[in-house]
Each structure stands twice: as C-alpha cells, then as structure tokens.
Length: 376
Image 1: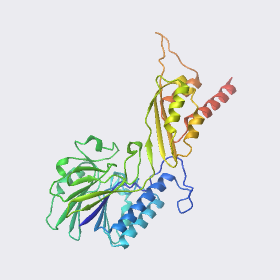
Image 2: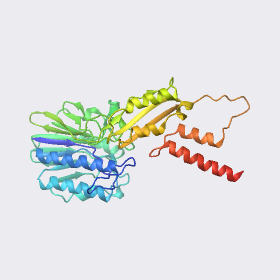
Image 3: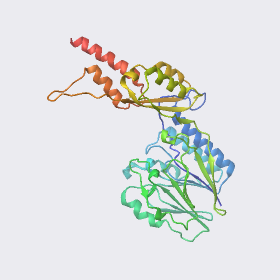
Image 4: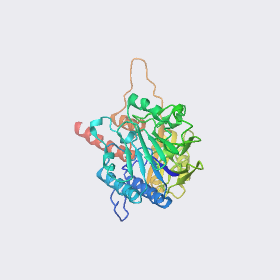
C-alpha cells in the first residue's frame, strides 16, 4: 500500500509587500500567498501522477482559523481534483485551523460532502478505514483532551496496515517545538513501534523521528529559520517500509552569512555588505544580518546602494543590530536627549516589520521638525 504524507501547507498565508504581477488568476494578490497556492497545486499534480492509495494531510491545511473565501475556494478546487481521481484524502486539523471557541465552527465542514475527502476536526479521536488501511487520527484540540486521546493510538487489528496521524511537537526533541500559541506536545512513548507508520505535522522540516515516524515538513518556507530547507512531501510503501522525500519547487529563501561590524568603519562595512549581495538574487527572499554596528558607522552607510544591489530580490530584509553607546549618568541627575534623538534611538532598538526604517526615520524626523517649528 502506497501512502503520500503531507502537512503544513498553510494556504492563505501572506507576508511582505510584494504583489504578484504575473498575468493570470493570481495577479494583484500578495506574492507569498500565491506561492503557497502554487506549491500546493504542484503537490496535487504530483499526487495525480503517483496515484497513491491514500493521502494523509497531518494538519494546518490553512494558515488561519478563518481562511479567506479565496483560500477556501482554492483548497476546494484542488481537493476536488483528488476526489475526482478516486484518491482518498484524510485531513486532520492543526493548531492554525482549530478555533479556540468551538462555537466558531470550522471551515473543514465544507469538505465533509466531498467524496473521498475525510476531514477530522471535531476535537475527538477518529478511526477511519480506507481499504486495507486503518487510520488512527487525532486532530488538534486544547488542554487535557488531547492527552486523554493519545492512548487511542494503538492497533485495532481490523486491517493489514495501521497508521497514526498527529499534529504536535515531540517531548525530548527541543527543536521540534515551533513555540506557537496553542501548540501541543506529545511524549515519544505514544509513538508506538507497532504502528506501520506515524504521520506527524507541525514541525516544518522533513525529519525522521523513528523508524516508523516522520515529519513530512511544510510545502513552503514561512520563516528564515527554514531558509535552505528542501520542501515537499513523503511517499511511503507500507509493505516494503520504504519512504522517499519528494521535493517541490519553491521560492528560494536565503539567510546570508552575518557580518560583525564591531571593528569596521563605514567604507569597510559597505564593502562587506556589497560582497554578500554580489550574487544573483532574482526572485529570492533574502535576509542579511549585520551585528554590533556602531551608531556612527550605521548613520554613514550607503543605504541607497545597498537597496539597489538587492533590487532583483522578491523581498530583501537587512537587519542592523546597533551597538548601543554607553551613556554616563551622574548621580542625582538624568540625561534626556532631544525628541529627535530619542525617536532615532527608539527605531534602532526595536524591529519594524514591513517598513523601511530609513524611510520611517526620515518621515518621522520631518514631522517632528514641523511640530517643533510650530510650537516655537
């Protein structure tokens, strides 16, 4: 029996400000949202070519509890393709698609009426039979209910093959925690060795946990912690116990080697930055971290040149960690900088997402100058 194991597709995810300008149905949408759709469509294309006996989706089909109509419509369209091909699909709810209040309802109800599509989302353990396979599925749920259901993950002996599905981290494997709100952690003792396979979701990197248990990983990259990781799904043969990772084409994401600016002047630091960016970045998501930068050096950098070098990137994220200068404070008195200095210092200390700090600083200083002129 051949199984496809996939997870963490996060349909509807969006990030950054780049808009898709390609001709076609996705024109005008957030580019990263489009990327999640394209990777999922490619996944479905591959499944239709492989014709497995069943597809197991181990959670986080959508990126949010309330996916947009666009994300819902796209998911339905792709699942219908699998349904029409008579390929059974079992989908469990992950923490991203489980409402904290049950009365909120679930988008997974839309899939219940599709032939061959079996969603598990009601917060209880379900046993599903697909031909000669029993699927023991536990969707994400809050609190103690999750722990109470874990003993259900044991063989029933009703079919030749039996697999478990979970969306959780694993106790004892620190790196498998995503540090997300509402995530669940399972003790490895519940990853029973007598199961033919345990299909895990939640951790975004493809990884074997045991001889019969694995995370398939996500189908796209969602943070720079995933830069360089291959993305895709797993193809398994339960009879031979062999499994193969099938990589999907995704948008490249690179975290460039960090620069220590502690002993560099502005000219030298500019040169170091240029050397990092002297490569083909077309269409990529790129981050460059520069640490321990003296404030005076930071102020003298050629930001226009830096931005020009990364023009081809889909998204470029320079992160400068300013080496804060020590301020001597005499006993009985406190030093308070000017309003403009305090504003610049605040911007340097705190990250600002989806906004160019240099532009924000220039505009802020302009507004402060106008305000001070009017009040004088």
